[in-house]
View 1 (cartoon, rainbow, N blue to C red):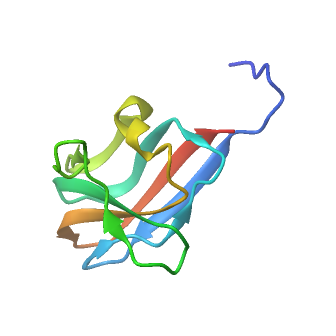
View 2 (view 1 turned 30 degrees about the vertical axis):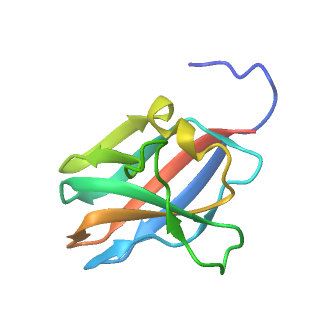
Length: 116
């Protein structure tokens, strides 16, 4: 059994890509540091990219690195977990959406655990 020293409850941001879709709902990650990405339902393998906007209902743009390439992580088939180290590029942003390079046949549910 683990112990929790700080007394703060962990934050869990939940998201979904609907069946047959490629784009998640909007997730507000304000004032949080993401610790990872947990894929809860069986995924179709592909690549995940990330979008951001200044407001929840704003115009979303794909997040790119300093050389103009899309920030992306590989999505393996089945369920998986991705380290927060690979998500550090999301720190300056508040509103995000996750986009799959392929349609998620049965939909995709995921959790972004975080700390305040």
